Length: 245
Image 1 (cartoon, rainbow, N blue to C red):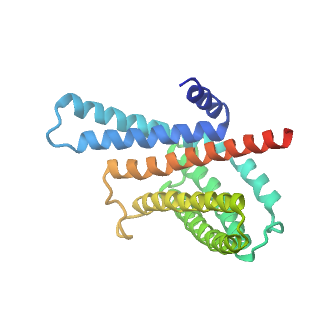
Image 2: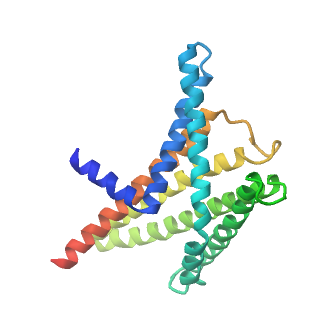
């Protein structure tokens, strides 16, 4: 129990970790609130609780939007350090990653303009800018799926070679990487489902999801993100211990 609390505290100390926790609570509140308001037989107190959770979820979402006002420079620094992906061995992964970085970089100013328009800081219509940001987010997610599928293909090739070479520890490491990429695909698919839901009506299933389903998909991708962050930090700690030994 104490170890779990310490892990949560460490997670909240970092900006990325705090954002993932806020995201999980945001979508979790939407899931529960949407389920409570959807139930026809729910009493008045349950209905009020459901509406309060939905309002709480909306406020957390707005909080994350405001915090992202300061993400442009960190994203630019990452894109600059990655460049054209000269360190990548595979050309497919390299160019998919470059395009993903472009989509992510363009996403932030579009969202900032939409937020500023809603806050009446600038005199423009926010609708088209929210649409641009949603399209860019969906494009980034789709590219993320393509990247993970390419990585899976390369990992399975390596795994076949390791089976012939009978390298046990190396095979277990490759299997962990394969599971991580499968989780990434599941997370991106959940998020891209929500991205399509927020597109203008008439595009696929845009606007057709009830609040609880949006919350369920968002909670799923958020929990996967927390698992991946915890796994990566654990592996980093293990490698640090090994290097010190």
